[in-house]
Image 1 (cartoon, rainbow, N blue to C red):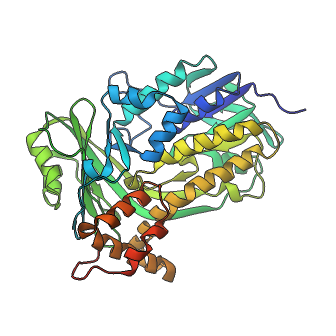
Image 2: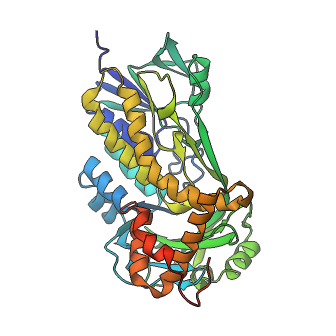
Image 3: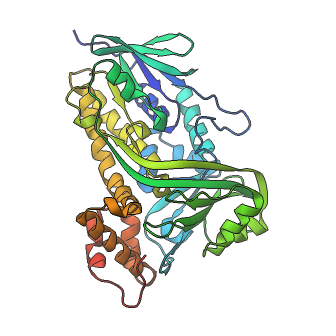
Length: 429
């Protein structure tokens, strides 16, 4: 007999978990989302989500996917103060060789706080009669042979499940649970980034002709960067970035000095003209990590993982939430196959297909922080990237292509002509 589509449990009530619960609510009679960190009633933040106070954005593919899953959510976010803009018109990017050209790229970007985005989705999901949101810390899967029959939390409660979804993020314990049940550990790939950033909010910032201004870090030499992003509530978030182990300061004096040491003047202007709100928040120790669940020889047929639980990407590239949204859309397509044998493995393969391009973009760049670990192919790719970046300030077409690639709308091979030609007189990154 095929197992019934009655009960599903989602571990983690963040962005990826909410999307998964929403999708599963169309199939299962009861979907229980277990979140370890209750939201603050005043800030909407979760203690276990240290990235919440920092800038967030959804790439164009993420926005359109979210709208597919939650019709009308785009307008709802706009009404609540989220900013959506053409990336080339609303973003200022200072590359090593100079400022990116300003002009329409046809690529949209949505910027808002994590609290607004998650709060809006949580309200949508909580309205579904088939979904319940529960506070708790899951510390084990419950097994009957090679099949998971539910989860157990730290209070000793057991939640029966016909399908278990791990959306617990970077701190996932799924590998340990699988190994403890006799399944092989998945291969894991790690790429060092050593990323750390510090963010502080500012109110009463004078109007500007941009929504976001960025000075990126670039391996292997540019370890300091920053950005300022306008979000809802007439607030600007200023973020100082350190890579390869560089740690930006979070005290007032150090924060201001670090910003003034960058070439992008928009950070210092925002700090000087705005009114600081609250304290500076740090988030660090961030690398790239991918569990190759799709490559394991054995996999339980009623357990799946998505979001950062599978692949945690360097957040500086802004791909994480878009990847989670695309994985949720893949899950919705595959639910037509549930509960056929092989459903879970098919999903992990779909998730891997979604992850490959953003992983390639992050890994090829970040691996340059460890020059002794670079292969000839990686060295060549890094050199090509530096040539592309050297062309950007004086070549709008190259910049438009770069924006399309970074937003997962085009394959990096479209940049090949720019990579083969170095701009005369322009420094490489």
